Every structure is written in C-alpha cells, then in structure tokens.
Amino acid sequence: MRLQAQPIEGKANEALIRFLAEMLDVSRSKVIITHGQTSKRKLVEVTGPQVSPDSAMRRLLASEQ
Image 1 (tube, rainbow, N blue to C red):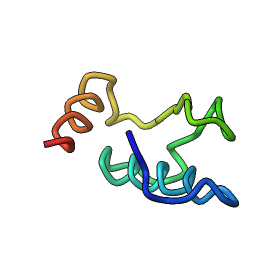
Image 2 (image 1 turned 90 degrees about the horizontal axis):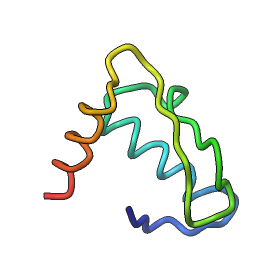
Image 3 (image 1 turned 135 degrees about the vertical axis):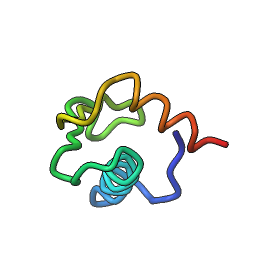
C-alpha cells in the first residue's frame, strides 16, 4: 500500500492506521503497528471480534478497485 503522507513525525504511520481502521470498521486504537515504525515495511495487528483475517483481506482487496 502506498501513502501520500510524508514519513515525518509519524504522519505516514497515522495515515496508515486511519485508513486501515476505516476500511476494517474498527476504532483506531484497535490498529497497532507492531514492527517497522520507521521502516517502509510494517507489520500491523488489528484486533476486534468482527475482524477475521479473511474478511480483512476481502475488504482491503476490494478497496484497490
């Protein structure tokens, strides 16, 4: 995924968290960048009872279209 936000003062990380929270219909506090805070490659954890890996992938792939 590519973001337009600059990687300055965490703006790109915050944009990623906002985007994922909106796409997966969870609060921003449920989206955590677990690895790669300062890297282009990140590992993100999303928690919540309504978020299964399959449904998350379907929603994210649908957003590409």
